[in-house]
Length: 278
Ligand code: PBG
Image (cartoon, rainbow, N blue to C red):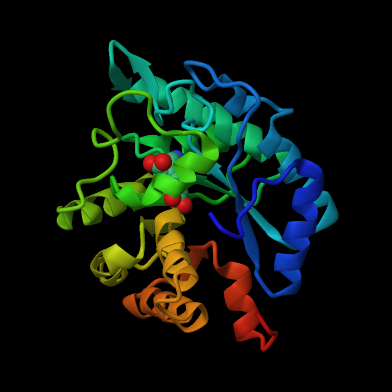
């Protein structure tokens, strides 16, 4: 992805400081471990890259809000978001991994955890585990309506997290199904989600609108790697002008009803919004 980098713990602070100084209130961390295994056990390592990055960022930039993605796909050798047995994803066994991962992020000092795995019951399981350890005030942003989209390809390329067999359609949502998004949102809110998310954003503006009208918790939308890359590619080919295209894309997500936007364009957009040059 042009303009996007995998940061080491020592260098992530500079990147985060730049974002903070542009007025971006929060960052979300995804980890790429040195070692991957069947159960994604490095996801829970107190010395793992995300845990170290959380500690470093909170020490250096205490007012910047730090979120972590809670999902084992970057840590599993097979690239799935769940524990695998007999070629299937084992939902309930995965919940234990997610609980341990969320606790290790909490212990590192994260401000909010964001489960993106799409296992059933994970928000409730994580809430229960956090409460039991004294983290009852740590909020959860649930990736509630996460579709099985082609638009994640550039991210998987960057994180080496493409599934080695099958696909993610047994746990991510069917792009043709709108009403299921509301069911997923309702379950997550009942289980304790403090904020819900729709992902991807631009091809799913109708879902953002539906969810906005359906629940009153804050709503986030994630403009994913493929959305970013399409805009970048069109600009690089000289077919459209990048800045207005980027701003129109973000405006459409906002207009659809998102309170919060996760986007790889954050720094570029912040420069425009605050009157800096791009
Ligand atoms: C999975 C995960 C995905 C992304 C980040 N974490 C989706 C997937 O691979 O199915 C994609 C993010 C992006 O495309 O920007 N936990």
